[in-house]
Image 1 (cartoon, rainbow, N blue to C red):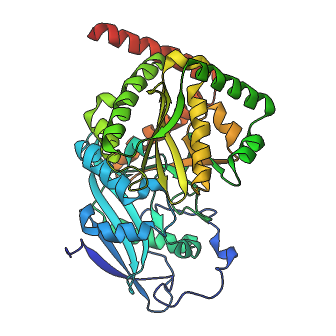
Image 2: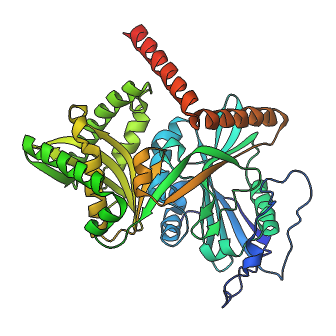
Image 3: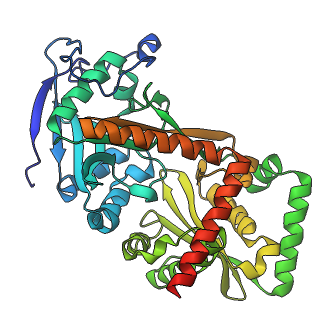
Length: 433
């Protein structure tokens, strides 16, 4: 096996090398009120108990820790967006093109048990060195993977000491910018979400899947909504044969993805949003993922077909019993029949039939998500300057995020922003024509 990156033994305040306690951690010790994740100056104040040690490794080569990573993600708390497949695919396409340098922090007990894996990246923005999570815009949720028992046992002082130690092993950087972080990981608090957090304008939405489709459909959707959707389905069936299909081979997957890119460009243009798929690296990220479809891989690509042609396409991810509904598009010629909503129904039906216990609708404040979802997860950003110029940049970034939240939570401001965005995009289109 290839030798891992820089390694350091550190005296642990957690007693991690000892046998696991037979009782649950003291709940009173789990509070994070007033926690300081990114302490300045001051000597390490973490309490040290006994002589237990754990190992911190910083690895720049993802392939060198692939098997460790894959084994850990099967039991760790975190999300599909921190899995090896997702991060390595993103780094191999988008990340490398943006010159993001991976710095994967591994924390392990001396007996070899992995306790946390933090997929950091360091990049340059406006001449500054910035520490971020890997995954970019393609990762709805960002952060690390953690052993749940380890996470439950952390208190404020302990994590502060651990973070100081991790920071000392990383190269210097001007700004720490960690976004899209949920407040909780599993049933434990996320140690990266502290009093210095900023609330983002959008939430992540999900629903717990139980029972069968008919029961879930009746529980979540009103009688009038169900009647409207059945009427729309009958209208579609009057046009021809309607079939829900899942791509299981590369040829079908690639064909659906190319159609998705094309339809998405048109729908984004109507909204005044530039098309991200003009970037070849972004296209390659999705196409590479599509080479290994569920159940052999995580990618799940499906379509609602009318007479053999796709009128709605969804690119999602399936991971550890959770379906992630991520990238969607539909043929605008059939807008009145809501093919996207009908397709969503079929995906939820399929997820229930195949033993999934959670359906994740992703980030965004569309009304239909509130029809289905009972869990709404706020996301947080931490922005901290580490140098003089970094602190100035952090001030600007925090102000920008606050302004974005104000605009997106105001119907008047959001409508105005949308109108301006459409006008700008139309002007650019005319100039490039």
